Image 1 (cartoon, rainbow, N blue to C red):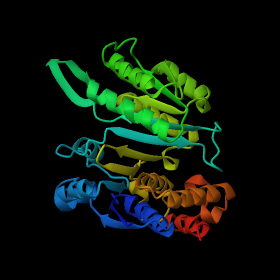
Image 2 (image 1 turned 90 degrees about the vertical axis):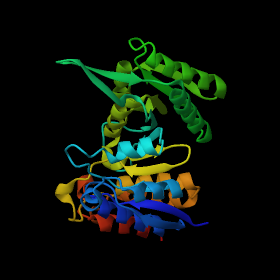
Image 3 (image 1 turned 180 degrees about the horizontal axis):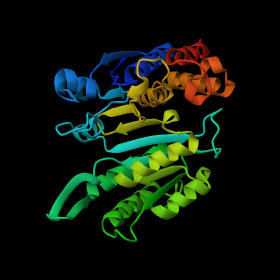
Length: 336
């Protein structure tokens, strides 16, 4: 079966790393037909919109997309591409797997956890008001519908992938109603899935301390929007940064897989950017599509390249001298 996937190169280094990912995915044996679509600052210059209607319609039609980094122009009139995609496609679950990578030295070993973040509400609902001059309020929104579906997603994810533990980070000791509702829904899913999945709750400040003391003790982290945004980047720092972790935004109908790092316009077009993050996100996309053999081939390939530590196969940020294209070619050789 051939799958049609949207490819959004983005801007800055996006086109380079997206092309590297496309080549690697095609070399894996996965049957993918690509529809290349614009988004970001380059799209704004050409179409007057960072997220053209044709891009959104294509994702709605094909249900799947792989996205490179995009730049949202600074100034009024432009909304974040990522926020628009999440809201318009109802991509309520942000999923960020984080694991220690072979050959990437950090202060921690044996990290293998998944951050699952509610993606649609909380303080990121953007409801703010100036009550009187100098006094601003920001409204945190929590609905039973959104809390239940992200809790169900997290426990289903744990069950289908044979993960053993779900930990909820919260601040229900202070935000007793909003975070209290989040905990209530998580507990209901704990009861529904039974004792095979261990469950714990940590006040988020304690959770952060426990993460930096021993991240290997965690398996799946379930968090509301703002906490998940912060913790997902913190966890990326445990294993080497945003350049070595994938990301995805998933809903009931559509899924967008993405590199979560920036567009780095200062090095665009120089063939020095590391494409690993978007390639890893491509592996997540293949698993989502059921192309598990192809996904495993790519994952084995980049694990081998990172483990072998040959300078001519690694980009500069991870200790080598290779370019974007050369890194991709090294992975392709491992799959021959």
